[in-house]
Image (cartoon, helix red, strand yellow):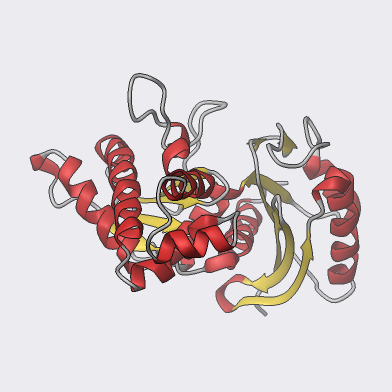
Length: 311
C-alpha cells in the first residue's frame, strides 16, 4: 500500500493543508483564507481545525511544511514573518507535533516550492534546478540531486536580495509584483494613453495583473515594462548561473502568469549576460504546479524525512 503524507503551506494570504500519496498527487485538501488582522494565532486556529479533520480521514507517515518567511529548518522554529505578526521565534514543529504526533520538517516556502517543481513540475528532468518566485516579494530555492540546498546558517538562495548595482538596488525592488505595480503607477502618472494605463487607472492596486491583457493588445508601455523586468531579472539570474550552473531555471509566482512573453524575454536577456564559455546557459521554464507548488513540495519534503527516519 502506498504511503500517505501531509503537506502544509502557510502564507500571508492563504493556508493550505493537503494529504497525498506523493506519486499519486493530492488526495485531500483544506484551504483557508488568511486574515492578517488575526495574526499568527488566527492561522494556528485554522491549522488546528484542518489537521483535526485530516487526522480523522487519513493515515499519514510524516508532515512537511512550507512557511512564508525565514525559518530554522533544523529545529522547525520560525524566525519571523514579514507579513503576519506573532510568528517570531515560534516553535512550529513542536506545536504541530502536539496536534499530530508524526515526524515533521519545516522549511521556507520558496525552498519547498522549488522542491515541488524539481520533482513534479517544470524542473523534473533537470539537475540542478534554480527556482525564483515573483510575487509579493522575490524569493529563490536551489535543488541539487533532488534535495534543497541550504547554505551555512542563516544562508539560503535569496535571489531577491542580490544587488543589481553598488547603490544597493535589489532584484526584489525591481522584479517583485509590488515593484512592477509601482513601475506601472509611475508611468501612468505621466501619461494615461494606451490599454495598460487605462486598465490600471480604472482599478488601482495590483496593477501588474493587467500586463498580460495589455501585452495581447501590443501596448507599448506594457512591452517596455516587460522588457525592463526581464532585463533586471536576467541580470540577477546571471549571477546565480555563474555561481551554481543550474540546468533549468523555473519562474514561479504571480508574475510568471504572464507566461511565454516573460519566459522568452528572461531567457534571451539572461543569455546576453552569461560569459561565452557557459553559453547557451540554462533553460528557462515556467512553473507548472501553480498554487500547488508549495503543498506538493511539502509532501515531497515529508516523504524525504520519512525515508531518512528523521523526526
